[in-house]
Image (cartoon, helix red, strand yellow):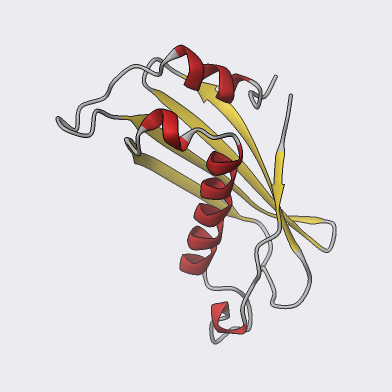
Length: 131
């Protein structure tokens, strides 16, 4: 199984009044990681941009702080007929700080309806599929 790793730049402005990265900013940082992964595996040109975030969940395990490197690791936890689930784990100072899952649905851009994942797209995701 392959993984994709990314360390986003955590900005000073990402902090909230409690001194840790705001929960809404975490979703944005995770999205940036996911977009970079999709670009890396060249999945965007295959989908034609036809992906819908159908569901997202995140477990915040420890506060993410400004300063120490935040490392995110991407895998795929499920591949369906027209959807797939991206699993992103965050670590900071060698501790797991969040666990995120996003269900993405492949859609036809014109109709907005779900459409099956093609063989080429499925093959890109299968390389990252968790055992």
